[in-house]
Amino acid sequence: MTTEEALQIFRDTGALLDGHFVLRSGLHSRQFFQCAMALQQMPIVEKLGHALADKVRGLGAITVISPAMGGLVIGQEVARQLGVRFIFVEKEDGKLVMRRGFRIAPGERILVVEDVVTKGGRVKETIDIVRANQGNVLGVAMIVDRSSGTVNLGIPLCSLIALNVETFDADKLPPDLAKLPATKPGSK
Image 1 (cartoon, rainbow, N blue to C red):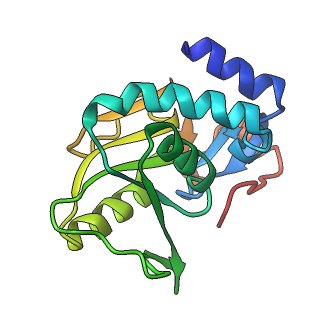
Image 2: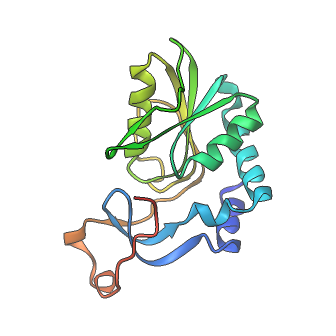
């Protein structure tokens, strides 16, 4: 799947939004990828999951882990496409934790899958949880890399869409963006 084909899926499903958005990272942006809109249709989930799985198949993961909520749908589909186990981390008292009886064996070969990455905060938290449980993080796969490859997590990263989408600190908004009301369409 090419970047343009993946972008077209977002356009066709109304999942690529334009306006003034506050991202989970606290940064502001003119564009927002609302993956939940694209991922509500199972044929699209299967198509995107297949494309991501093909990119990471050679890593040899035996488990996929995703941060909830955004990474759940695509993470589970990538795991299904790879024929491996799927687990997730979720928020508890404001930070990600592994619950629900999930366990990671020492040395377990794990792939992190997320929907959208801007600065990589939730992915870093997920990696830290895997490493704290002695797992071996092989790489990170995502549908959208909003940093266009500038996020460095010290492990291989792959995405279907890699764009350098402009982001701004709240106190450094360009005048045109400052005039628009800010919305926070993502998960908190």
